[in-house]
Image (cartoon, rainbow, N blue to C red):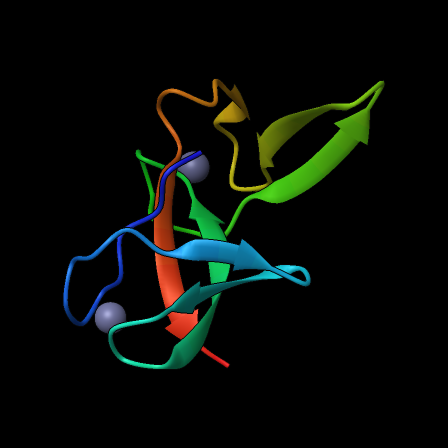
Length: 73
Ligand SMILES: [Zn+2]
Ligand SMILES: [Zn+2]
């Protein structure tokens, strides 16, 4: 999955469980948000796949609809 740096929009690398931007030399963690309410989604990991559940009543959110944001570590 490609992730773009929130600061410089370059594609980041996945390193040791987080994203790293070489350009900014910064680390970011990924946060999944509901496209309907903007609240953080709960990650349900099963059989190598990840499902996203909105605890605000929107149910399971397909990965294509999940909004990802990136926060400095
Ligand atoms: Zn950057
Ligand atoms: Zn929601």
